[in-house]
Amino acid sequence: MHEMSICEGLVQVLEDQAESQHYSRVKQVWLEIGPLASVETEALRFCFDACTRNTLAEGAVLHIIDLPGSGWCLGCSQQIKVRQRYQACPECGSYQVQVTGGEELRIKELEVD
Image (cartoon, rainbow, N blue to C red; front, side, top):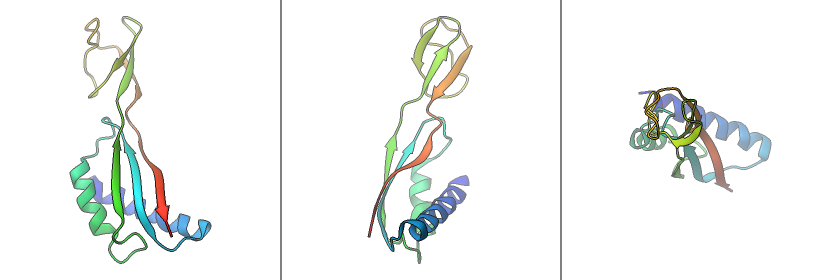
C-alpha cells in the first residue's frame, strides 16, 4: 500500500513547512489528485489519519479534489478525456494518446494556526 508512504511524505512536507512558515498546527489539507496518479483515495484517507497521529496535523480534515484526466490523440489531433492509461481515443480508436493531465498529486491548500 503506497498510500502510507504518500501520507508519510505529506506529513514530512507539513512539518518542514511549519518550520519555515512558522505555524504550529494544520487544521485542513486540500489535495489535488488525478485519476492517473494511481492513488486509492479511501486508502489515502485511512493512512492520513494513521500518519498524522501525534503530529502537528493530528485531527486535520483531509479534502480530496478530483482532477480530470486528459490526453492528446496523435491520430486525430483531438484533446480527449482520459480515465486510465493506454485507453483508445473515443473519437478515432487510436491508441496513440499522449497524457497531458491527470497524473497530479499535490497539496493545493492548507488551513493552519
